[in-house]
Length: 201
Image (cartoon, rainbow, N blue to C red):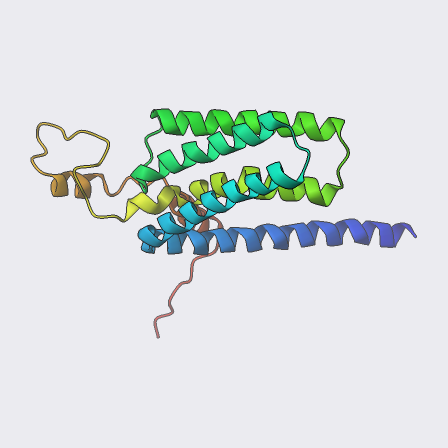
């Protein structure tokens, strides 16, 4: 009896490891697609925002959630639309970005407060959190690395130094500094996974 119990824990650890590796591989692939197709990514995120606003409209019409949850959720989606105006560039000190982060926190607080006092099945609570609270912020998080491979423009947020005379020189001098999600996965791949060594015959 105890041996099978021990095997169940070992199997659970192996299954969780496979799930984590699968999610990481999927995120790596999605991050590469986002870097290649930034315009399409912007359209997809805009559609996700509009679908989430439609979901809030359906919740308002057919469910008994509080008006504060619905109003804060719609304001959060409006803030996401404002953040999307400068996509793929994100200004972390801009009013829309800070407002989006604040309203995500407020929405989570209101949702936890409501669902802890009113019973709903777990699947319904999880679907609310997934579709209304997590989908759009997660898509923004995955697309953080999208601005690493775009062409240099004057819309870049950092001003040019005096010795850097043009945008292209500035772009290629800063190109080695990459901080996005794809860069993190590349670093993890190079440091964790074994490297292939070509045999010379």
